[in-house]
Image (cartoon, rainbow, N blue to C red):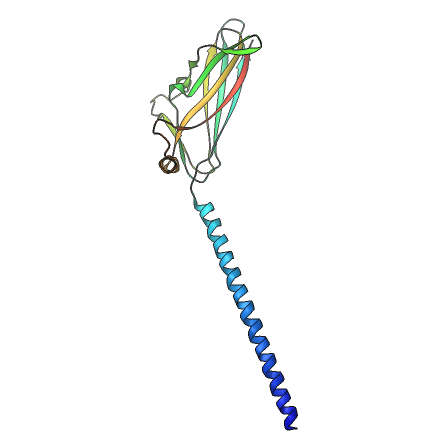
Length: 193
């Protein structure tokens, strides 16, 4: 009987040692895994909280031909901020331009550009500033209208310098020269009848 109790005690001790060893291995694995999960969560949070604007520009033109006067062109510019920080877009006179395009030996020849950024209605009080701030997930649309007398193919270009806190920090971090600005824009070809 004493011999059976000794065997049971040894067997229990071996089982306890195996259980403690398994628990130690599992704890080491679980702690390591929790550390990896915490690191991935931290990286995810950094990505979600890093503020950066991402502006997309879409142009839409409408052409209104007239037999007696020059053709009227409407340009709707839609600015979409898909980023996580605001961006300021400059709306100076040169932001919108139109350029006549001819062809020579199959290659385009661009004439002198005409700046049309001042063809946007600024209201009776003209309190509209020379820029627009677009917040995260916001969309802003502005419209321009002008006339073109000569028929042909034209390039309509909207190109705006943009600024934000992120871009200032990014330029400093990447040692971007001060004369270089970030911009957002879009081009569209139109045919004037």
